[in-house]
Length: 290
Image (cartoon, rainbow, N blue to C red; front, side):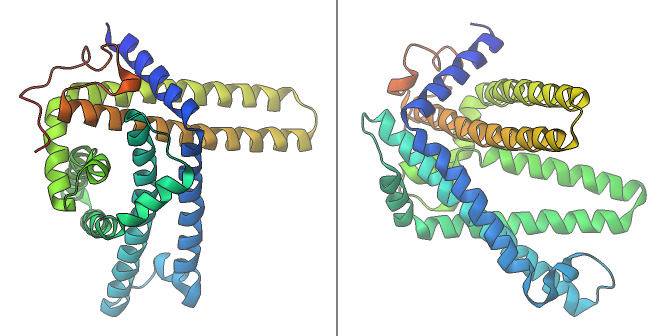
């Protein structure tokens, strides 16, 4: 099976899972709404929007700026992780032959609040350090600034890759966030090829869908004589692209969970049976949960 054919098969299987547990689509919606509310609550009071907008920055203001930035990263990481845990638990239950309700998944995520918060602290700390590197690179300028920006980009990419399976690990195993990072790294070593195929495969299909919506919308705006109708078309296109992004985000989480299960157990999950994952990569050593 070629890379593109495998990617298309993975996409179909992931969306088939979404069809069985449509409530999973609500979790990214909840996460988006919660994130917006959190940002508003953090930025509006006491002129904090002006604080983040730039301008003269003394030592005290600089400290407040980075403290606020850390709190924003912390809150957003917590919200995103909480609802991703809900999605992974729903998928896990389906793989095990069950059918988790919306409340079942939310209740499970509540039992993981401590580790979710601990992981969010780590994630926010890394995010803040990367933001500081960005600021230093901007102030440095020149060749040194460019080199620092490249280093920062590489570090950010490495972090996102190595932590790809942290949430599935936290759901499947009773481990600390640091141990989850270690386990995630081990899974990446086993699945890096298929992880990239998933990324580019689903990403390509998502891009094609978004491109089709954009081209269609632009065409309709050009031919419509009514400014009101053009506005409606643009808004509808924006909503469609946002919804599409949310759906593909859940699909990515579904496949990551399936990939995690196969990498750690050597067995394909029930809904991904048939050799799809087995033909995608070869486990590099004896499967184990440790």
